[in-house]
Image (cartoon, rainbow, N blue to C red; front, top):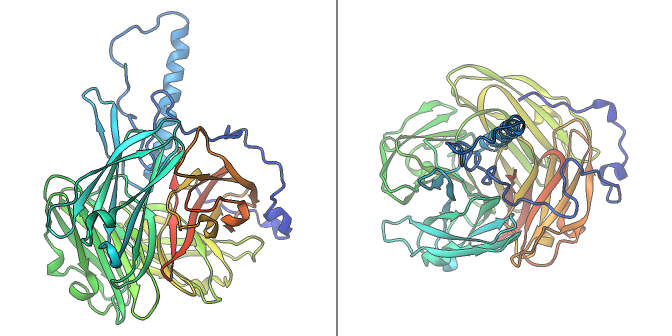
Amino acid sequence: MARRRRDDGGDERDADEVFDFESERDFDDLDLGERIDFGEDDDTDVGAGGAGAGADGESGGGGGDDGAGEGSGSNRLVVVGLIVLVIAVGVVLSMSFPASEQTTTAGGEPLEQVWICPDTPGGGKAGTGTISIMNLTETAMDGTVTFVSGDGQAPPDPQPIAVKSFGRTTVDAADAFGGRPGAAIVALPPGAVAVAQQVTRSAEEPKGVAAFPCSPASSTDWYFASGSTKAGRQQSLVLVNPSQDTAIVDVTFRTDAGEERPERGNGISLPPRSQTILDVDANLVIRRDAVATVVRTERGRIVAAQRLSVDGASGFGEALGTPAGTSTSLLTGGREGGGQSQAIGVLNTTGDPGTYTVTVYPDQDGQIVPPLVDQALDPGAATTVDLAELGSSSTSGFEIDTTVPAVVDQMRSFDAGRAYVGAVAQPARRWALPASSDNARNDSIEVLNPGSDQVDVDVYAVRSDGGDRLDEVGDGFSLPGGSRATITLSDLDVPQGPSGIVVAASDAVVAARTFAGNGDRAVEVGTPLP
């Protein structure tokens, strides 16, 4: 992906230009009007987070009438255009996740799309595991949540789910397990849907809250750039085998002492439809300051998440791994100073040497910071970006460009709580943020504009009662090129109570959501939408 540099000629920026709530925004290119339509569009349906439903199985392609006559040429152009559109959207979405797992009919038509939500703490006093589902189509959807056992016992019975058009629903997975560990698999018809998991731990250590997208697919490989097992640090891997066959897993660690392959991490057997939690700090890699992790299957496909915490500190971080390295990674960022801090991990997923460059996107009208250019990235090794070298003491977002495929993630510490965040490989015009606190007005959204031109941003709330369209909240705002912003949802008049959020922009951005819970802070990375 080509580097996107800001126009440094815009040093002097007026605050009203940064947050212009009254400006007229031209969304003609997005065709938004008073509504975002994510409904089905003939044969070009794209599942949220996947590579495109039905992209490689054209309906009605074989035999039949070719439409002979002067219209046949234009028809072929239309078909080619649709194929190009599907491929383009698939490329954008597949940069963050592998291709969406879908059940198809005998004719190859998509029947359902699936998301795997890897972690559910025990119910009751132990905590909650809430799965938030947003349907961004004009058609109500019926689906199923299937549970995956984490203790070898029979899982709870599947639950039917119903999501209204342009609506949101939640599933209390922890309540379904009744105090037992496990995971969940959500299945729904094809269409624009976003699914995220919110894990709240109330009794078991570490306590706190985390929110992250569920995975639209399993994979043979998962990478985590950050981690630590030094004294007082906890690092755990959550592994889920969603299939009906046994999976065999090997875990390798890239530490400050070099590559480590503990015997207990080789040939781990994951029974069909099961969840396993590995305590890395206690059983696999002991007393290492920096621990990056590579999870690879010898057989089968799995989903992997990682949980990080610190003794005596509030909160914990949890996020999905990344299934493949990319050359560009984007983070909405956070604050350095004032009781907050952040650290960025970069893992070279190849056996070749490379370099990385960090571009800083300041908050609002913050100070422009020169990039950290061409830092060494050893073969197969991980490094932690020294943010002190960047000279930024305010809130900033980041772009990390690498000359070899790499995985990037981030630890963020707040005055109360911490969050573990995976980077996004591509910006997009629309982002879905399904998870929510009890009152969404207390939540905030973070928007990063990595392009050089100003973008105009609109925000939409998605409630459980749905409707025939998405209603905009507030008057939106404008964001200059090469910058980021944090917007409290109460400033946009989001309704009281929990709600999903859709962020729509006039050009490609990255969006995340932050909220508090159980003495912690969650940072939910958005799901890109077609």
